[in-house]
Length: 188
Image (cartoon, rainbow, N blue to C red; front, side, top):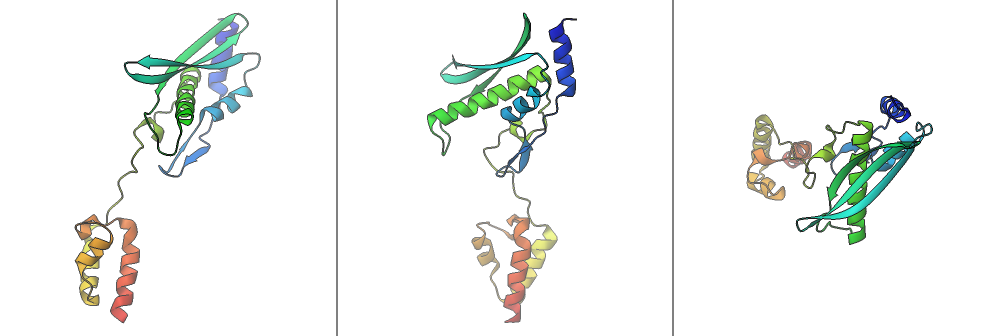
């Protein structure tokens, strides 16, 4: 085996790049390109890691083609990954969109080079919409209905306030607040 192959195998075994970032919107942990680079710097031991980008057109869309190259002496190996630029992204200008695609493509090139498994990351799917909210159970919906009747509150008003058609469509997180309000109304 070559020095590069030995070193790459060692780096793949030793690399610890925890998911140190947190996405508040999607409620998941992830690792960024920067997290991987910081972790691998500590264990390169004579190898050189280079990352590069190239903008390529595929059809009518721009992609960032990122290449991660590891070298030791005259030997080198590389992995390439692509990320498509979004046409628009709320709150980002065009350079930020390109930078985001670059970071994403570089992360996946590094994942391929160092055998980092990200299949269980939430960012492997479409995260443009939040996950569906958990709804109240049928028992909770019946409880709300009974309490609303006792408190003289129209069920349709509760539904309207939460922009749902039926009590069964209420988010479960709303249950405790609704019950508390109905208890207070029943006492009055």
